[in-house]
Image (cartoon, rainbow over all chains, first blue to last red; front, side, top):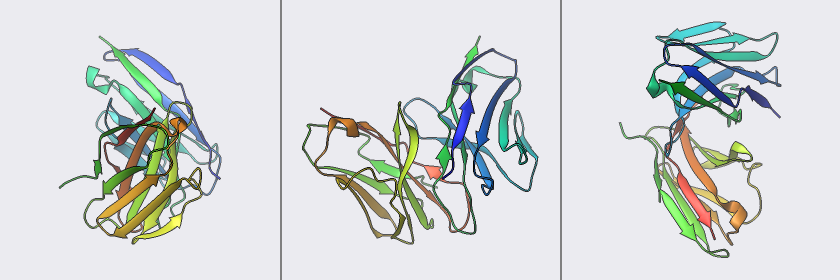
Length: 114
Length: 113
């Protein structure tokens, strides 16, 4: 089955700086890669996703890049703000027309220092 | 639009008791997923349904766990008998046929004493 590794487990950055979280996956058939943000006491909320036919996707201050050859993908957050503090999860799955369960990384606790 | 609704939000019970967690998916979504989140193992898939039919239950840890989806708007995850190691946050998620993303509820925090 799929295995997703996520680094770092904790990331502390100064407000206004950029944050980068990296994930690798094992199954070359995986073709969908979402990123979720989880705040305390809440469920994971999708912030951005990318499919394997795209190398990069951007949504305001958030971007995701995908390197299919190396089987890794990254989340980039620019101009970080206090409300960006949360736990971020990457995930991967093979979506061959249906829908299967996501395989998640272990999460990154992002801390924005004022 | 209403999101995925889970109940109860918190459950504390003693070992050996039966526990039932409930989920209402987003209307129109054909897939429903149950996940479990622990510090040690992170978020892991337990089981998922398509059109109310269980498709993959390979993540269900033991026979003590069972899940049902009697109709398109309701699913249950039952643990009987419960054990302290079942303590975790259980999430339900749903998605449309053949499409991502999965939308998560806010979970049920389960504590087995």
